[in-house]
Length: 553
Image (cartoon, rainbow, N blue to C red):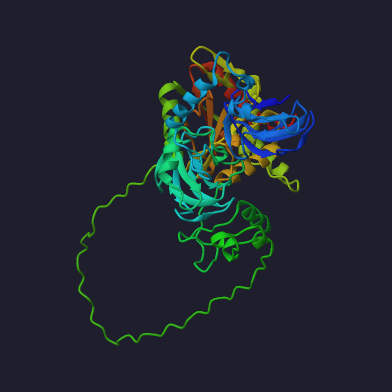
């Protein structure tokens, strides 16, 4: 008997899942314990194991597609078994039985009624909707279209660059055909799941497709089940200027290359502007990078500039008074999704959480000496920021009240310690998260911070790497800022602002000497962290930083 497999709930907050890849195909034999597919949740990509055995008879969610929890994912049964009734029933076996008392005559009367209510989707037409490229994304802006209406689309082609609330990401097509319709123009914003584009056979009536999509026709053709959705490994890409002679350049001066080709080029240190693409419209693909041989670049020859004879005697021009000239001008720049999200979240935090601030000055002499000793070891680099992260993580273990989240009717005490480290990027601010930071060594923290900060600046950081912080650190010391305050990164209860190290006269053992000090300021949510609790937390951080050896125990 056929077994129905529904989209599982793989995390406590999961509402829908994306099938990243199928490891079994229709017709394959499935044993109990076999991995059927890899499913992306709101937190991670996880393997989904089969608890049944038989033959995979039907796949309800294609690779790259998104489906709500408990919707039909697959059907496993005996080879040759008819599963049409289960598929049409949306994953229930009740449709196999005819309701009692219903006559054939009644059925034939009802059939025309249902067909007149819906417009049938033309064969081969595929509706591509605005994808959800991050867990907090509610709308997206089309930064640019790389394909135009009438262009031929191959599977794997980049359709457009979509700006989310966190980054600008490439949106790849998982279908092939002709681009028949563009629903969201460049620069326009549309909600998630609204119609982005239509792909199908050349000559397909677009109006019929739009009417069919509006009527909700999704069960009459298999083509409606292949709505293009983003996979979890979409690569964000920054735009770069390239020579016009490059065969892989679009009219906008952007290098067009597949994500795999970019990765290989980055690993080998190859400049993609020098690579000629052999893919669609000159797109650089894997083999182009692997077969690329750098050519010697000839140095430009300076042209001689003829000298201009100067008259032996020249009259001195009259000096005229300076008169300001010009016109007042302004430019209105549309806010990016990232800037709008930053404004919304920080506004909500500042106006909903009662902030207060505590500042303490740290003696950094021992920290400077310890860092110098640690960094003398080959292949090890530790920054002062790494020491601050470690000190805060250990202090949070001693002061759990700071590692909390305020709810209207309760306070959540987090037993795990995930420290967010604010990173400035061109469009705003991103906060990569160090998971279980209290369990990391100083060198591990240093390596992880550099890795995540690099990903953030290159727009390659994933939403999962920015989620789940329980405490945040913002460091402007490298810009020479002595002291500042930050807005709490909700749902955290506190954020630490770190200034620069300065040399100044200090009193030690009754004598005035030159010392190195650094100011840090803790912003607290008074709903969860009282003043005394915040002060005790800062004292613990101070003890750790001023005596780094205690963090190595």
